[in-house]
Image 1 (cartoon, rainbow, N blue to C red):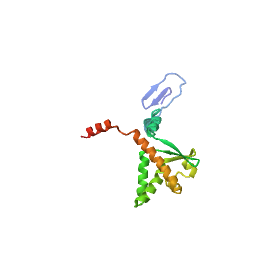
Image 2 (cartoon, helix red, strand yellow; image 1 turned 60 degrees about the vertical axis):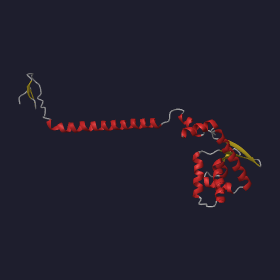
Image 3 (tube, helix red, strand yellow; image 1 turned 180 degrees about the vertical axis):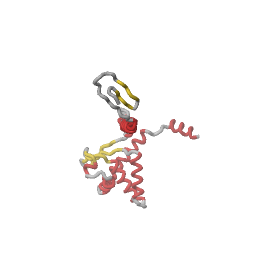
Image 4 (cartoon, helix red, strand yellow; image 1 turned 120 degrees about the horizontal axis):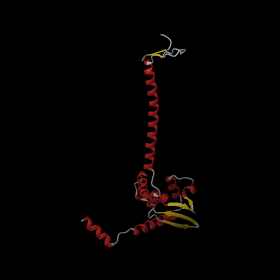
Amino acid sequence: MSKGEIRSSLGKVSINRPGNKVLTVEDESDNEQVYSRTFNAVNEENDEAYLEELERVRQEKKAAVRRAPEGAKTRLELILGLARLYDDVEIDGIKFTIRSLKGSEVKAVMAALIDSGLTTQILQSFELRAQTLARAICKIDDVDFELVIGSNDINYKAEVIQEMEESVINYLYSKYTALMNQNVKRFDLGKDDKEVVENIKK
């Protein structure tokens, strides 16, 4: 190759200026695979970052769906506590705060009664009172019942109640019954309403 020439895979170029150095451009067609691998690696990294971002957005959307609207939790608490009645019962200077039970709590009382395995009616009545009051008594002298006895175990609460004097248990249970009856009367259907319901059933 003479002076003033540049050779490459594309051909030969002559430069007619004296003193120019000869530059040779090598055929780099063999490096195409290297460029391809590098390009693909970059793309894979970008794809991975994109997928991570996409997953993050999806998780945020799911969290937004699960998140209750503002004020919804308060409304739910109001609904769950709707019509719940409380009463303070004083015995020898000690105040017991009792409350009406929710449907789930009444169901739990019945389940505990069945699990007790008691077969005689009189023993079942004792267990019924204890399991009911274990859930109905919420405070003693304005202190949470579980803090007073040092346990939140419902069966232990029932055991503590069974250790009370029989007259005290009877009195507390009668107050609870009166509270439940008061709640029933609040939502008792009137005569006209009952007639409407009966007509609908026909």
